[in-house]
Amino acid sequence: MSAVLRIAVTGASGFCGGYVARAAAARGAEVLCVGRRPGPVGRHLPWDAARAEPDLGAADLVVHCAAAVGDHPPGSPAEAEQYAVNVGGTARLLAAAGGRPVVWVSSASVYDPRPGAARPGAPPIREDHPTAAGQLNGYGRSKALGERLALDAGAVVLRPRAVYGAGDPHLVPRLLARVRGGVLLLPGRDVALSLTAVENLAEACLAAAGWPPGAYNVTDARPYRRDEVVRRVLRAYGVRARIAHVPLALARLARSAELTPYALDQLARSVVLDIDRARAQGWVPRHGLADHLAAVGARTP
Image 1: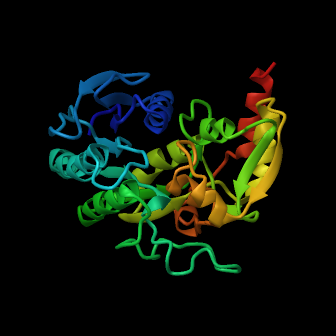
Image 2: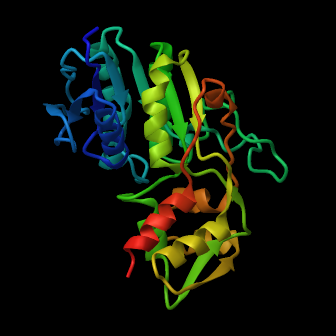
């Protein structure tokens, strides 16, 4: 192994991969940004995950963040692209890794919601919760298939939930887009949710190279109450709106581009992940929503 650690980060031009690449560079690593576009630091190694095998440039460690996200109609070309990237791309990446350590960033979307994980009083979801079926969309299904390949190859698989932070292209923008006439409609009752600061995920990605192979949940230190999170986000972004609750059945009928069936479920169903397995490896989630919102508030006029 070289004196300077070489870390290949796929998807480094994206939200999560960019944070991993910058965190790796800040620790003195040589960063290889593998993907269609250059990353924020390091050297660019072009790769189309849907069609080719990557050149990993003599990397010592591979952190695989590249993924095709979205809630697409079943059978659509966009869903087919998800499988090409999230499953086929994983197979090509693992072949190119050639025995190098791989940290594969998955998602809590792989968990089957049917075995009662969201019932009142249910314990937090552990890594042995079923992932073989039941995912709510092509993203969840393709990530479950991709991570199965990664686990079979001896990779470390990280399962964050609802990743947020500066530059978040999905979570907060879609929430703010739902404000209409000073009102934000939320589906169903208030629920407990696990969220993951992107900084916590990035630190876990770099720490996980030394962990035993297998799956690990990665979230903030404690779960949040949905309604309180929404109120704090609205305040931090200077949006004056009140929260109103809509029966879940009605919300399903009124779904929109911002509130797809998958997004609706993410807001309406309590999902709390158990992170004891990652903690046992010495990982500590040092960041939380308060840190992010304080930074947002400092930037908001």
